[in-house]
Image (cartoon, rainbow, N blue to C red; front, side, top):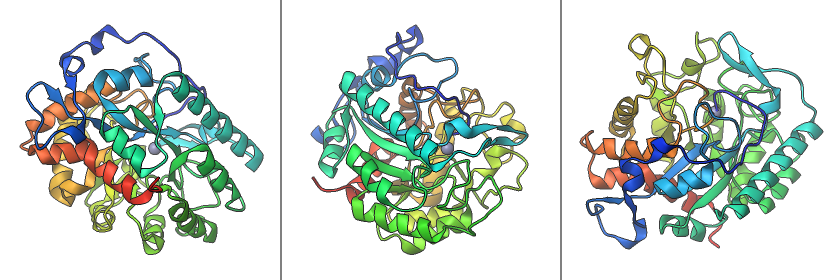
Length: 374
Ligand SMILES: [Zn+2]
């Protein structure tokens, strides 16, 4: 995520009238039940590798997760806890740590949020993805959330909390976010571990053993390298953007610190992994370095997707919207926007099979390679 508030807002608020558009009118059709390209008027399902909708507040859009997923055919959403949210603030260059939580506070916040998400999913008829078979069900049209955590702060000294989180349903884990943790270094602050710590390395192995997908977003470059040395299964880098070189904590702006180098993106891809683009929009994209996507600029986002497909291949790009995490400056911040992107990708000269992979298939593939079979 890029911005933060503390409250859990899994509410049933009315869908905005503006959502009634071409996307809402499209008939949703399960991916598994058809061959190549969808018939005219039919929509391919959407998967999102990173969303906070309903967990943190969202600027200017009160619709809720279940309503949006069902309205716009988003059937597989990685729904991510922001485990350090109460201890974040805004610094001169972006989000920074504010305060020193105790391990008990971090663990209590994580569990409270996770339990709130489970209750919301049950109340709103959203399935929880726990197995590879559940990914197939989502592909077939069952609206499903994958419980994720944007950072591993609930783990402090040993890996026992990981087993507990897995049993509750956690299936995707991002190693670091915006506060110091005993796992590894993140790209927006100076390093203290020089990559992953010994506990962080153990965590990579333990996630693979349990069947939890590893997310390398926010990691420093050495931390990504360490994870790739250890991991044997595909991993994702769920949200951000890709450039010729990597971002780092000395960069001038937060969005620059959050960029992945194309070399590392290719390494993630070579291991079968997937890189996701976030929904950040910049106020002055014309003057920006690299990420030339403006506010509400869906066409710009679609262009970046096509660019990344050309850089690292059609099998390795997906959406990682960061809905509700992108703060007040966004190109994409709800699932009608993502549906619009799917349509805009056709104008980017991407073939139907590639669009389908980006929209759903790539994320589904890494999950099926990682999660328990049943
Ligand atoms: Zn993030």
